[in-house]
Image (cartoon, rainbow, N blue to C red):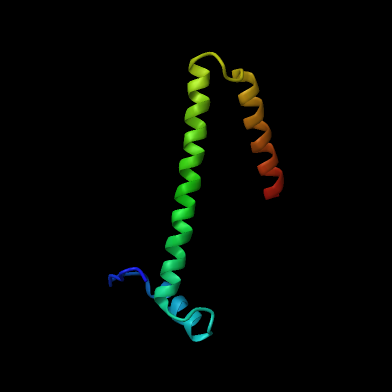
Length: 90
């Protein structure tokens, strides 16, 4: 088992109450388990974010070399995504 380290976290009362309620309901065994799960989710988010940034940097590099898509294609895709997102929101 990994070496454990105790830390103190300060949070709003409402968040602490939600954590205690999740433990009391049996959804989680301890508040530490909740925090560990949240940190794992955050790590996954950071990995996805880094991968997305790497893809974006690669596309920018292609564009700088003249190998990328045309600006019109890029903007058309962006406008389509915005239009689709707006349609889903309504």
